[in-house]
Image (tube, rainbow, N blue to C red; front, side, top):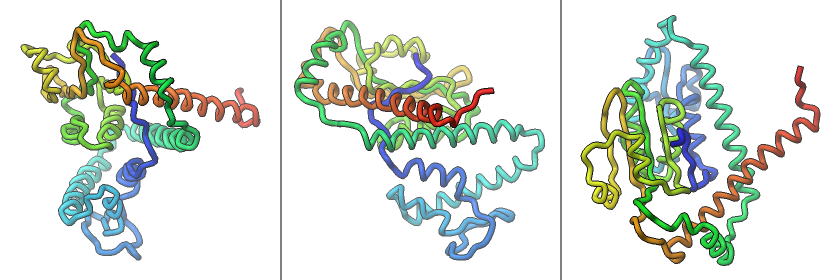
Amino acid sequence: MHALRKILKRTTPHTFWGLLVLVMFGSYSCGDSKDKGRLLAKVGELELYEADVTFLAYTQLDSAEVVSNYVDQWITEQILVTEAEKDETIDRQSIDRRIEEFRNELLIHQLENKRIDEQLDTNVSTKEIEAYYKDHQADFQLNDYLVKVLYLKIPLDAPDIDKIGGAYKLRKDEDIETIEIYAKMYASNFYYDIDNWIYFDDILKEIPLHDINKDRFILKRSKLRFEESGFYYFLNIVDYKLKNSTSPISFERENIKARIINLRIKDLRQNIKNDIIKNAYENGNVTVY
């Protein structure tokens, strides 16, 4: 099973990435307080002003309680970070390298998505849908339960595990992005492929489920979190297909349309990368010694 997720719903230009960068790199103030509004909290020489929490408006949860919770979180984090900064045994080079790698991935991701938005054709004809259904009949013939799942395996000592405790249920559009970033940094294994069905028995090879009633577990679209052998396990049965049945095209129409668009996105993403790299070589911007 892949340690990387594949997600059908493409990332659109959204404030999520900007919010993430603000939280990670830009929300800690300790300088000129001009035009920053009211001082909300202070830890040592670090100060948090009203201007530093304006990004909370993007969450559509801009309320006194949300701000208060963020201030409490900020104070706790600054206390711990200040203490960590005193520890000279911490591998700062490794931390800086991970931050730089993560920043580069965010930049590339946003560039690709911007160009995909500019170039993607989202019109899918009835003829294309029917041809796809005809050419992929095996996808709709079931010998056992097929499921779409989100699966995470995370060490018990991973930080901020409560973020995943809510997000893995996928109740909000931005939850999968939250999970993807967290999984990249901390997960031992991660799987989410909304584009393809997999056999439920393949999940059982990856996650130690014991004494479950398979029929009931799947039909209830169970969402499960538990601890075992030094790991947190998260499992969300997002969707399923009954065994010994064939999905009619009327049921699969939107699914097939989304699959076709996803294939276009995949091709576009690769073509965009190839074109950028090709241009860099042709323009003499690459030198190999």
